[in-house]
Length: 228
Image 1 (cartoon, rainbow, N blue to C red):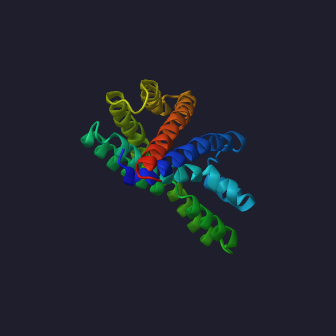
Image 2 (cartoon, rainbow, N blue to C red; image 1 turned 90 degrees about the vertical axis):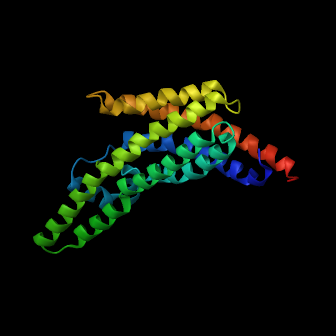
Image 3 (spheres, rainbow, N blue to C red; image 1 turned 60 degrees about the horizontal axis):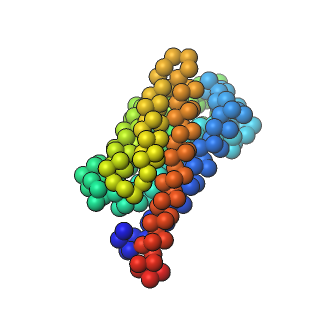
């Protein structure tokens, strides 16, 4: 390991640990407060519980995406000698997926529209904000979401195959992510799709933990080489 990057390994490891914590928190939010299906439902939720509204619009997954950046950088540095081309592709697609996720999760946009709707004094004004809210929900389920969702398993598959070629991560760690990648597409299965994708998220949580542990180990080892 390049000793000059020891802090990035450590930050990537800590980020992966926090990501593992975020997943069950977001799942609990979904169970305790299922997302509304209408714009009025979202506006009402935001007016009654602003924080719960943000969490229901998957704001925690936006944080997850931000944290995935230092983790992806650390994985690139750790595995680039195994396959510099594929780790570079993994890093680039991961960044594209994060940007798409930002666009697809307009949590604060909906909060703003909810406040404007509550402050509106005429039906015409309310209609404008309802239409804007409907547009935000279309974004929530639209192209950006599909891009970010598709890039998740694709980048996971790429980095898992690179892990299988090297010896820094266990084969079990790589296989867990591969299974998770396959189950990710279960969301498109009628009726039981949500359950299948939820199981894939649980496997992703399990994957984050050994990745975090290994990156922290690499950071400590590189730090000792650097005399820190």
